[in-house]
Each structure stands twice: as C-alpha cells, then as structure tokens.
Amino acid sequence: MNANIISKTVKERRKALGITQQELAHKAGVGLRFIRELEQGKSTVQVAKVNQVLFMFGLELAAVPIDRERLLHETG
Image (cartoon, rainbow, N blue to C red; front, top):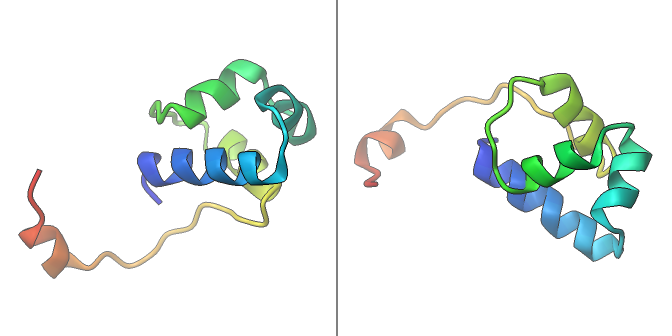
C-alpha cells in the first residue's frame, strides 16, 4: 500500500463506521494529530503506528510483489 492508498482506506473505513478521527485515535492508541496526518497522506516512517490504525479495520501493512511492467508504463 502506498501512502495515498493507506490514507484513502483509513478515511473511507472510518467514515463507513461513523466514527470521528478523535474516536479512531483513541481506539487505535495513537494521537489525533497522527490520524489527521495519516488521512492527509503525509509520509511517515512510523510503520508500527500505521499498523495500529489499520488493525482497527482488520488490515496491516505488508510487502507485496510489484507489477514492474505496469510501473514502467505508468505516467505521472
């Protein structure tokens, strides 16, 4: 997952559950600022915190194979 996919996923799932950023922060054991920055797509090296949040939705960061052919042909 790249930063944009993660931020979009967290925001969409949070809204689908009808919880605020503050509620998610509390339930995940992270700060409100972290949730705000995560949903804005800010790059972070705090993988453990990202996983704390994703865990709330039954997800986790993982290494996945990259489709190199697709990457070679992407623009922008």
